[in-house]
Image (cartoon, rainbow, N blue to C red; front, top):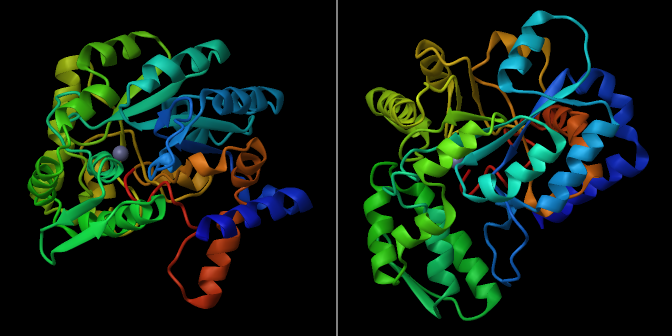
Length: 360
Ligand SMILES: [Zn+2]
């Protein structure tokens, strides 16, 4: 339902060209885009994480559109230089991919290389270390392969998962349960859930995420910047000061040791209000990161240079794979409109960004 409304907003703005009226005030200098996976769409009927992936064909169309529209695709460092340089210049976008999925190397890199554009991959080091439980994939695998699932942490529940509707309902209910767990308690609960439902977590990690050797190959491509994304992919804002710092520093240490250089850029896991906050923006600045990106949508202005560890990003949501939607999003108009509506109504809800919800 929410997705239908969002699509209607994007389509109306696109069709009326109204976003172009606002663009001079809302488009800013450029924008950072968020992706996760890039692969040919699977044909499964149950795909609760489809918002986290775009196809290589869409990515190719998008990069061609940037070229045709004279929008420069730049690195994060170049974006920071342009923002603080103050000079007028072409509009730009920064392409980022979170988590470290193998398709970033096998599927996305050839597309980026064909267009000769740089990109950044933010890696949570528990994934290449094969010491993690990506709960969104574990839930999907458990629900896809069974007629019922049982949740035992806290309020116990057994959910039927026979039909596609039941599977989606169970996924959304259990995702909310996972997100209500403490960050440090989540792993044990999900390992137990995986064991009880026959989900092979090491197998999931091997199938979906790059190894360190693959990350070195990606890094050696000359187009990829590797950035930090913690060790265990927690919501930093829900951790103590000590644990938050540990997640950022240990992740950066690990990347430096395996890849030979210390990351200068960072993406907050989840990255939206409630999952990350002011304390974390100050922490990343204090730890010497040149930039850190959120998933709160928005465009970049010269003012963004003053808070480089709280940069907004726009998600390329798998349910919105249409270049015209991206054009409207880059105009900044939907976010400005939602900020205005929020101010008028006193609501705290931002332009809904489903890619930010349930993983990220
Ligand atoms: Zn992530």
